[in-house]
Amino acid sequence: MKIAEWTQKLKKNYLFQSVAEKVKSFKEKNPYANIINMGIGDVSLPICKSVVNSCIKSANEMGNIESFRGYSPNSGYDFLKKSIQQDYQDRNISLDLDEIFISDGAKSDMSNILDIFSSDNVCLIPDPVYPVYLDTSIMNGMTVKFINATEDNNFLPLPDLSVKSDIIYICSPNNPTGASYSKPELKLWVDYALSCDAVILFDAAYESFIEDDSCKSIFEVENSDLCAIEFKSFSKSSGFTGMRCGYSIVPKKLKRNGESLNSLWSRRHSTKFNGVPYIIQRAAEACLSTEGKKECSKFIKYYKENSKSISKTLDNLGIKYFGGKNSPYIWMKCINDMNSWEFFDYLLEKFQIVGTPGSGFGKNGEGFFRLSCFGSHENTLEACKRLENMKK
Ligand code: MLT
Image (cartoon, rainbow, N blue to C red):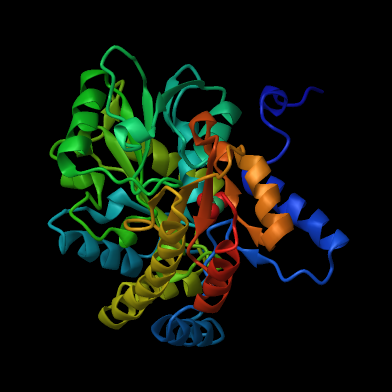
């Protein structure tokens, strides 16, 4: 018996697990510390009224012989797919229902999608970025190349035509930097992917935070349906981190080596996944109703208030930062030449504030630090008050 080779290639812990372990050990030593967690991007507001009502209604349906349901259709119920289809149609993007696959979230989809590709592929991954892309590419035995996202390119790298790749991860708005691509910039990526027959895996988990004219979907770009798959999640837009629902859009026009990637994903999804619970799919449908959208947009507004408070504090302190506008994260520079993990320890020990070390998102994240804006106003303001005492 041999264990998988990737187990020897990855760091011991997933980034947020390392953070959680450090916090746990600090808590053991300081049981009365009032820790403010601005680390993992977990929401603090409860699900909205329309969603709660929908859950109650569908739970009752499940308890009634006439309306009880067993297995969900594998790729999701049509009622939810139709709401998603309409949501895209409102932005002039036409989708067929069988291009939409409902899942338990974007994180799993973005990892699982690699199952349909040969391990003999090169994955192009921005640095810094959400660590799941790198970890899962390694788990799937892919070769990884990085593309640098730095202050010099406003954290928005563009394709280098001399670099060949097969699978391109793009996260826009980017986690952790908050940088988001415009349509002309994404068109360059689409053109590049088409020129080398690559497939773009487009993570739009933070799309609902966009407040300028950045692209909200890769499918706004012409011909992207020939080279891209999009991943969305209800986690951050609708407070579903604990509810778990997301979806992927795999265009039927997308083919490689004569095979439809839509059919291959359907094959993979139906074999390894048994569908999202009916109650959760009804809850997700409620998020996309007129009332649900209105309520969820208030969440975004609420979290954006936090971004403003943190930005103001950092401005007063003269600390450089990015993000916070099209994303729920502030990407700040560590002070006094500390590296990311040193700064993590400093903030935890001195101010009992937890954030995420930038180096956990890639080597270009070294010297940076991510603060989540998903906390309560009260905690965020308290954190800002503590941060004001930071000495440069
Ligand atoms: C984040 O904070 O980057 C994400 O919420 C973490 C995750 O999805 O694993």
